[in-house]
Image (cartoon, rainbow, N blue to C red; front, side, top):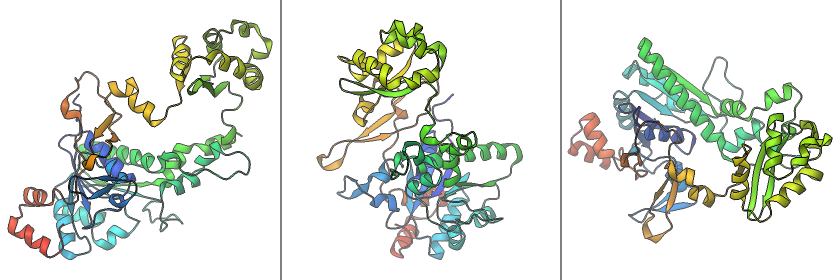
Length: 406
């Protein structure tokens, strides 16, 4: 299978910030041609902090940098009649149109599903919003704005690391509230693409960030069987972190056949006959008074990587607790080419961006697998309008003078 299985797929995306840009970046890394539509001043992710210095001396927010590899971009004033007409002309040239505005906003602009479908009857249309576009019936939260920490909190994600009445620690899972919905949007688009191949019919895929996070956080099922999220791992065995000389490593032993391997790995063969440790409940009960002191004494003189490797050699699931620098230098990450490094103009430190986690076995690595740098604002406006719509250079210059195209 090709490393670019979506080659030939064309996507037009009116997007901002993380959720949809992350989805379309993955599609781009898989070979799709993604044309990103931005306002003349650039989408909001370009203006976030921290920022990266570009060759022309401008600054680009890291939110934009890490979610827009391999894309082309065109700047349009979608509030103008001409800008809207250009968008619909572009929509007639693609397989899918995507947007992550607040519900109803694209309809007011005249670029919603109904308007695009008139121009392109078999189009796939993907929307991501906080609480979905459904109107029959609508979510009571439909008109609300949403960012990742909001839907993460509403979905119960923060209950896993919260004890009692302590304050929830927001954004404790990176941008999961954005990247999780992004992955569901990709699944939805690919499912709709398959359906269109069978039926010839387009469709509107609608992803609510809140729904996606409820699925990912998985607190509803746990509660239904009497388990509080903060105690979800209590009593199921040994599932904890232990200290080594330079940090922490994790161990998971939650099945009886794994326990003898664990005992041998940490040089405690007597535990196999210890009645206190005959069950998973016993492992959990004696974690702090028996198991932790012995494991951390065994790990003394070892790094977290050495401790994890020794456990893994005995068939025990274990791994170091990594910081960003550990991940970048990890031999697994380097072997799979997951992190892409880009130079920063002005002598700043290089910028690392995560590529596609998907790999297709049987294909040799190619230089082409390295994605193109994130696009400058309006960098492909002239090329796209010329190649996709056949506009002359004079007409494009006129549109720029009118403030329709950037």
